[in-house]
Image (cartoon, rainbow, N blue to C red; front, side, top):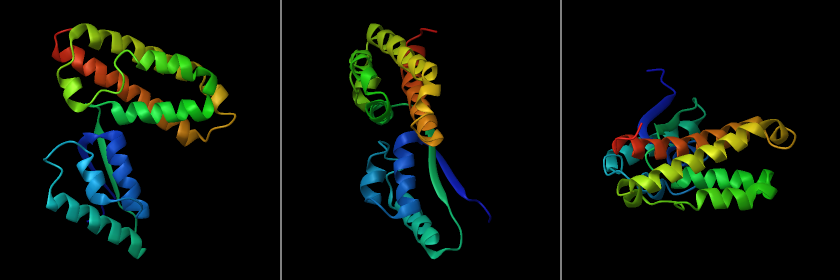
Length: 173
């Protein structure tokens, strides 16, 4: 029907890891699908779609992509930001680790059950990291590809948005 992107309400970095499989064939699609947290996506029908998309891409007839556009759980996004900092700004790594250590890399259940004070502290520290990355973007452009910088910034935004989501659910604006 001419569509080239299948996008669902799923955590962005986890879905993009699955997209890497759809594009390259690397990884275990079942494992990647399980890593998206929700039973609604972890079905044989969605796995069949992913396998079909990979087969279509491998055929050379065109390129399909599988993406997500949500930010409920920040662990993988935080890992992506840390990997970027480790590679392109290692001097910032101790301050980064200190900022994200406010709550660590929370699991799905920890995010759902987070106390208000923890969510506020996390939000403030996540914004601090995002601000730092934005301030140093020009420096990163000297060594990192634009796509890597954009992905690090997007993942830092997802961490902020995830903390913000917890605060909103708890009645803090």
